Image 1 (tube, helix red, strand yellow):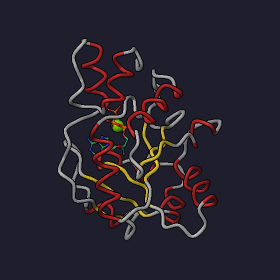
Image 2: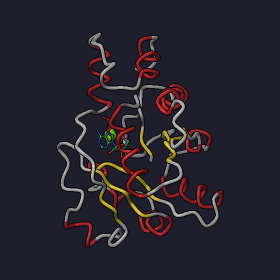
Image 3: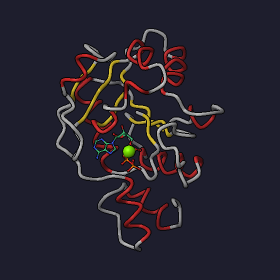
Image 4: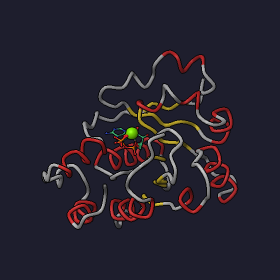
Length: 190
Ligand code: ATP
Ligand code: MG
């Protein structure tokens, strides 16, 4: 599961846990992007801070793991490269790339989307404001036949909203894991 995680929130954990439960996954890696190609304005919060927040979000949950794979790799963070590394490190593993429906429309424009769906199936959850994760266009894209739609209640939380609340001095402890709230209160994030 990739993303900017600026900051990680309860929607990310709900998505990871829904995927793990429904697909019987042994492990879910949360992989913060170093330089996300889809956020051309960049991400204000340093990668090391976002990784520390993902580690705090994952906590002691044995199913979840924060991965520094993209932060340790120079250059833009392409999912296809990350999946190639994960596949090489885990020979024979069945892989899924987990994402919210808001990411689907742009998926065909990502770097080597055909390679992504060759290495992994997509596990997609609906997201408030995004299209239906089972939307018809998928049938005609490179991801045809490689998508699993997750049955998960929509979680109306986004990092953008959490950042706005933090900048207004509002409490966000009902939106993010406790460890992340503590880091934000200590000044992590932008
Ligand atoms: P931002 O508002 O900064 O874009 P975000 O909340 O969308 O932040 P990202 O780090 O961009 O968080 O998302 C990482 C992945 O998690 C993406 O695939 C995104 O679709 C998914 N995701 C994030 N929040 C939710 C949510 N509430 N429900 C389902 N999927 C989510
Ligand atoms: Mg997003």
